Image (cartoon, rainbow, N blue to C red; front, top):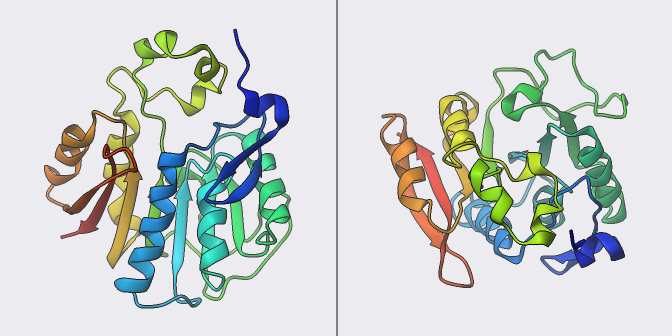
Length: 243
């Protein structure tokens, strides 16, 4: 099976920045840059701020490219980044240090929202180092922006992907039988972690916009603000707010 060139060189560029990558992480794609630009657009135009009032959560952070891209442009924001893979988090922390934002992002190992600290006493990152937030961080804390590029490939489709893509971690690709498992799980929980005027921003597969929109709009908890196209004019990111 052909190895991606990025794993051979150990580098990939994302949003104008170089990121360390290896076989433990999903390789950042250019289309995912829309999540960073959309988060920044929301922060500046809707929240009208670039300061430390913003609390941001990145689910399925992988090599940390989204969280780091946001942190570089919103230096005062408090950012939490979660991934189920400890090896991926090691790479993400390496990238955060390289881009000088390691003090601005707290990395946690866990399954989606299950990776969040569960009490104000649990203030440690994946290195076990203690830290203090501007506000007490606990299960009732709300985020201004929740962003995610979750796994969204149908399980049975993985075997037919390009060889290079099949070399990437299956856990970062496999979205279940219909590719929508993570969207359903995020829909079930996100409302409990969003500020009333907050934004949920999620990447989608090229043919998933209608189904993802239905998952969130049919719950009666969310409003679909917009579906944003990527550089190839493919529906790629969905903006979701609370009703």
